[in-house]
Image (cartoon, rainbow, N blue to C red; front, side):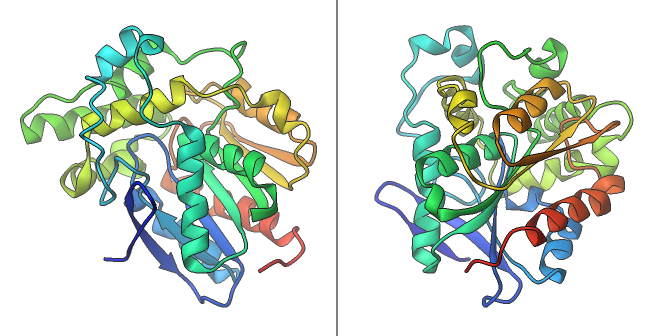
Length: 294
């Protein structure tokens, strides 16, 4: 099990493809783990001549759980997030990704981030633009306060503490993905929701989810700052995303000076199997448009 340690945490990572190829770093979302990156998507990228590195964010999967930094439950965080000090923020999560680049001896990477991972990728690109070859932001947001919020039913279904019994917890997590995945594709069958059991057993942490959530809720708006970023960008968003509404993807693409927006009409907050070929093609087309860097 490959791991590396920063000054504060130990993180799990995985590699795919030839090590001599240009690097693509996958950064995942709230509670997500490396297993939530579809193999078909990774294969599409590596088959196109790229090397892929993915890792579990702190407080998820096989990476360190910071349980000594107790912030209470997800519900207590949501009741008054500004009253609770965030133990870490997006800059810390971005530094984790940079530390992995350092550990691997890489000058930089193409970044692909989903949801929270897209926010981390944006933050990394703003803080260390020299380390970023290109930016792909999927189902994510600039955190600008004037953007529309999540559908309340979808938010409550996905961002809530599972019941204690294992079977009930897995059902709860799978249903959360079903709701945010939208009505067109059942996430429990063809999306990330079908991984609820594997993810729960591998390293789901409700306490960790609360800490990651605080990092999102305390994040500084990035829309205006992104306007000055000269990094090739691709923004992918679902047309029926109930958790991060499409306006958030549109804003991200509009703020990035060098970005293309790809909207998948029937996609929710998910990476559904029927769309993986098209999503993978969009990402590879974007990567191929960037001058080769190593």
